[in-house]
Image 1 (spheres, rainbow, N blue to C red):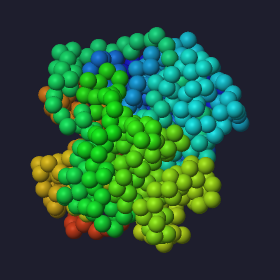
Image 2 (cartoon, one colour; image 1 turned 180 degrees about the vertical axis):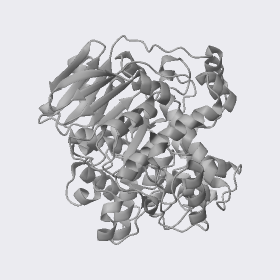
Image 3 (cartoon, rainbow, N blue to C red; image 1 turned 60 degrees about the vertical axis):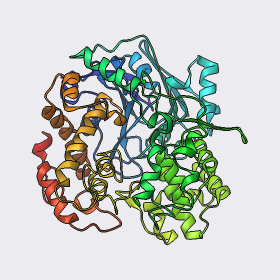
Length: 550
């Protein structure tokens, strides 16, 4: 089976030392990326660790397909105990980091401990260097990049960086790379911030010792990505805004409503496309669905906003102005904030204060949250921890704020939110795509438990390879088999082991069926959860038997 190779690199932040550990056996079973990080976290991270304590371990990992020149492979994984959800969480980011990470010679890097001084860490194929950078305290992401470029010739595509939000341990702080690409969900930026790590660089001349079982299929996928006429090449994920609005799946006014008819034209795909000023992509990818945007009147430039930011800082806040959403996106990137959690948390505050549509207030709150100033200090904790004080509904699952695909309309999506190990996460199974397209009827839960589980397993494989989730039009069961040199059903079994490990880890921290909940009711949810647990071989309480992860 296709897998990555090499040793684990462990960085002890407090001692400023490093060591390597062979992990070939684990890689044979877990491919790379999210799989190997989950396996190592399950083995090495204390079940009772404090997410913001030195005993938490953060993992950065790449997958075997970073050795190829195939489209949809310019991504990598980050895994840690989440300060937002209190469970194990993985996130991945695109851009240009993955192959520079691989060139340092390690498939997985583990960070443990904490430093008294703010650090930059430089990982190369020749060794590791720790650099004290107290002068970068409070620096934005791009300011940190400029400092690393001036001092060491390291550009943004070599760096993973914590903004002020991470330094201040905002529970949904992102880890940023390529300046504008985010390991967004779960607060992994806060984990590095708690360790007093400002940035980590990766560079070298090492090659991943990986051969594809079938080189021809990589060429086929790359050719299709280059030649396919797809609206995402013009509008990215915002190409679906109008459809979601028509299907009442565009949450509006902190989830009070499910469409934004009065403002959707100001933030839809056409509005974003009107601001796009050049092509944008990730490493090696010919699909090029990224959105570098510019507003000529104000001079504002950013990358995006993608759909989730259009929802979280647009309809969710009753803002129908794409330039305002672009500004929110740009500030979140610079400060290192997950746009979904930040926008939803601000939405909770706007509802409490009846201030929807106030762009000046929204942009001010972003700054205050990142620096934990004034009301931003409490909002930095996220909706789950502040909704009672605000007197608003708790729009989270497992402590994670909801994205913009409404489970009240897309019932399989609702089930997937409830079961996802990292909380309200649209990327964990992506069943909403089938419901939007009518391949699975949006209403009802009959038969959807096994579909959700299989999709969760497949996405775990993607995150281990690492393959972009937007590759689905180019992928098929047969192409998966040719890429990996393994039967499709066996690949799903790899994904199942990864999901089991995540869930088992979270079970040890007290998670069970009582946490697989939503802030709304869907008829048949209890039966669907029973079916889901049975399909996975878990107990009726949603607990993974120890034998499943032995």
